[in-house]
Amino acid sequence: MTIIDGKKISSDIKHELKTSVAACKQQVNAVPGLTVIIVGEDPASQVYVRNKAKSCKEIGMNSEVIELPKEITQEQLLSRIEALNIDPEVHGILVQQPLPPHIDEYAVTMAISPSKDVDGFHPENVGQMVLGNLNKCFLSCTPYGILELLSRYNIETRGKHCVVVGRSNIVGKPMANLMLQKLEATNCTVTICHSATKNMSELTRQADILIVAIGRANFITKDMVKPGAVVIDVGMNRIEDASRKSGYRLVGDVDYNPVSENASAITPVPGGVGPMTIAMLLKNTLQSFMRANS
Ligand code: GUN
Image (cartoon, rainbow, N blue to C red; front, side, top):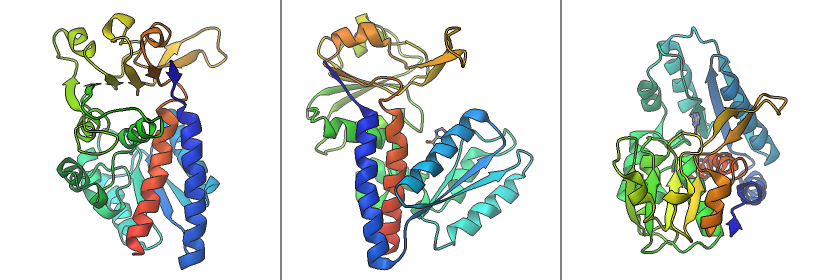
């Protein structure tokens, strides 16, 4: 059984990106820049945003975090985004979600220039991805990171049955779409399951590759997994644990210990898919810079 080490792969990718950023600096005397906007003081979002900025610095990219009060109006937020859209030093713009309820996430997504939408959330990027024009779009970072894991672990995907559990716009839908593209690390037969799926275990048991992003702790049990399956766990659920100083621990959507007895390869939580998301965000930001300078 192989434990898919996302921490190691993300570190490898960051090293590769650091070399590319240094080459940018030498060739055009400029480096890619990522601006992250955070609205309000959600503690989990603050941690994510700090990690994104720290990773940028590690590889020599510029990064700016814009912290805005939760009372900001939608109009004010949109005008900040418009200024970033025309700033030539900004190559990637990310507005951390969730946003306060008075701000329409769709309006924010639409306001970000598709050419700087390194989250890959804008319909133009989603549409190009669905059409298979992967050199004309930004891929949503978590599904993109999962493709990298499959590819760097040489996992055979062609003709395999991939079952995606979850249908979010950020993970499930783009993931399923990517797995059916005609690429080296994809080319699967794809089934999507979600909260209203009947007899889900009948479907998950058919999976050669099972990708789970449903947001429920330990949802996938051993009896739902075919012996020899590759299991990718996107879940990050906090569950109470009095033995920890923090009072909680992180678990995935997959019941890791029993399922790993059935799997041929599996991603742990933490240390599997999570670290890949930031690595791919940086990769998208470099891509944006390259397109702007070509
Ligand atoms: N909140 C949690 N994950 C993400 C992400 O990938 N992008 C943005 N913009 N917000 C998030």
